[in-house]
Amino acid sequence: MWIMANLTKTITTYSDGSLKIVEENKPIGTFGYLLHDFETTYWYETKEGVIPGVSRGYPRMAVGQPETVNTYEKDNKQHLSVEWQEFYKKMWCLAAFGVADLNKFGQIENQFNSAMASNRVITNFSDWINGYMTLGMGGNIVRVLGEGRPPGFGMSYTVETLNSSEPPPDVVDVFYNKPWLWSKATVSRYAKPEEGKTIDPWHSVDPFPQLANWNAHTPLMLISSTGKANMLQCRVQIMENYNVPNPYNPEQIKAYPQ
Image (cartoon, rainbow, N blue to C red; front, side, top):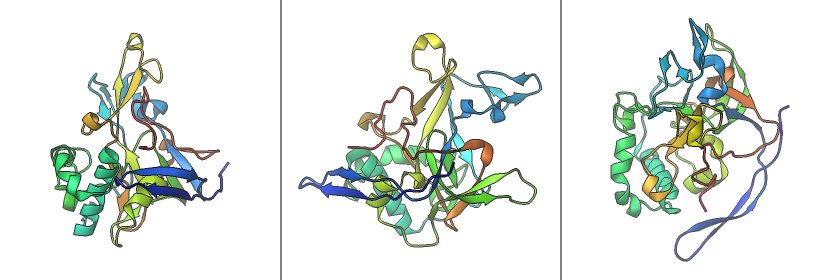
């Protein structure tokens, strides 16, 4: 069932610059939950069949793998204008400090550069300003605009994204009110049941480590040059009731920073 609702949130700014959500309603639209790697057998198909703890044809390592949910547009790498670069850095400041203040960015610049390195999943051997990829992350949500069927590919859903060809929207509004436009970056790993931190018997989900010292999410923009992208339907589960899940196990970071 596809749901319709309306979203407004009242955000109060305190004298110290911190933000707090005071009032919340539900959003208009159809929303989908991005399945964790282990929640779909799609990635586990091997010549021996479906094997727990195996993903994309190789054994899942104890250190884990990023739970990227690809789009058909992921290789159309985004050029981020100065305004979009500042927008994204402010998202990191909101995650770490609760304020969109670039004066604080220097405190997390090394961590940001680590996530944006050319050999990381977000950029895939490009610099982040000219090679930012259109990706989601397992355990997060997207706003579904309809069905899309790119020629020669599997069934897909068209989802809303940020639009790099337009000026950035208000970063505070996106960060607090529109969680379908960015992901909390996740890592899924093989875990033994006796570890006591598994969602299913063999997997656990952790945040990206960059902002661990701030007990904060690593935000990943969902952005394209058109404001929409296509994701395989096998990775998107249409939600009957809108909610913003905490994508980690255990729930190490709250679904919204307070």
